[in-house]
Length: 128
Image (cartoon, rainbow, N blue to C red; front, top):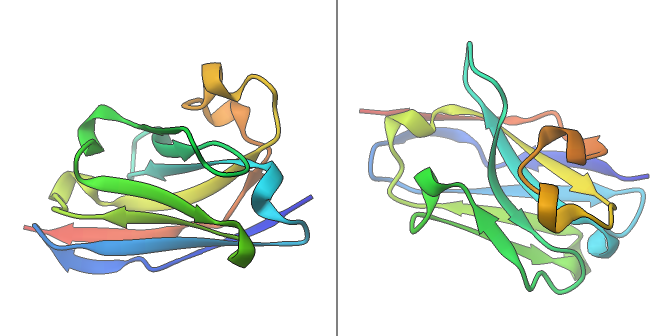
């Protein structure tokens, strides 16, 4: 059982940066694979980035954010972060963090159905 709360969203101009944080409570985050997803109005929730449990040695990114976004974790602070650089208007969405304990995460990390726990989301708006 883990509770997730995102923060760090806001309004930024195209080309700017934001850093999102996901803070967990209730149980230590170390044992969870973590993901960031986003959802724009009228669109399905889509995978953005993922990081494996424990030391976070494996990360994944959707193609549209590769080279611009980084994901990291700080288990001591029960926090997973998403650093977003060179933001584009198409990055505008509500961003959610999610946690998973499955043993098959490496084959299903990009699926919403993989994750058991979700935060409430934080709005990111990128203006042109």
